[in-house]
Image (cartoon, rainbow, N blue to C red; front, side, top):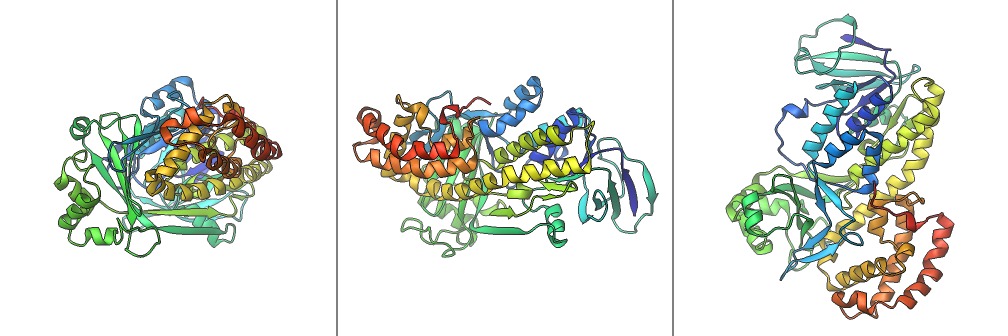
Length: 523
């Protein structure tokens, strides 16, 4: 066993992913002494490969970057490509569906790998200590602050940051040693959807957890630069090939390539979304005969995407051989254990990626947690009671919103797979955009805008969910008087819209204390 004294540092973070690295950066800059323990090796020394999904960074999540210096925020945003809407490939010419009112409202497509490397380096530069290769074995909660037990490599090579002084060391004979860390402050669990901290808390009876997996999985599919450019693949859009029970997506990278992701049932018949055009489609079926069966599937369903993917052989090899990822939702019912520990990001609320809000919700967690630590447990006055107050307030504020975005992300899965190809749905989206751009725009913002952009006027995920249901009913009513998506702006009945907003939407806005005029793309 190898004992380490953490008494000189007030906060320990488990997990050096996006949320953990951002939180470490912000807290270290605020004067906390932060140590981050990460299960895996330093991502900066590992080539990108596998099951990474490109991230969509939206204004809601990017507001957390206001906690960083302007130059750091600017350099981070340089990692992204602006995306202004969906490009739907449903047969015929691609159809563009704008996200916001106009091109001034956009998201960023960012490589998870590049963003994680950037944030880890910023955390290190801010003064945080980073320890890689530390796999959590257990959490003891009996004392004032937790005691963590890790399995770690014998050698410290590859570790970055300042080592703590050892109180006692006894080498084990295996490839790993056991490291016991007596924390001098609280533990923040930012170790993702499979959080080992959360599992340890659950085993100790301190946290109940509900998790559910989708019947679908995903694989990464790369669009080479030359093929994407030759095919005129627009960089400002999220490209979607909706096919009922499966779909292909592509988001631009800085180097001109696109990171694609194909989503599909794992086994045929294990869900109810299959339609006639895609019945029987599953990863098991596609992988059954390797590249040959993958090629046949792609030619049948994604013929228009094949030139962009570099041809059928290259695409089929990716589909047959790339690893399969899982999709699921995790809801922790308790996030805080007094002033000892708190869950953040996916450790508290892992969600499926179909609203592009997983990272953004985690970053908003960081923004709120830091605000509450400033209020209750700033570095100069931090105490167990102060941490407990901050963590309790954090859970109360964030859990209802995390539950709401989890539900909406699942709903958006159906929308992206099927609805985006439906002419009636496209008509309704056009009516929605026309209403946002009408003189009533300050009184109506789409659910998408509320979710992705947020706003100071209490535009939370939970309120966006509640208002969104009423707003879509209004859009459906207004769409009855519009002949086509192309004529939505000209044929929108503004007088009827004003009456419906006053009768159905504004009473709920008043009840929820939401000011839609504050919905803003500005981070």
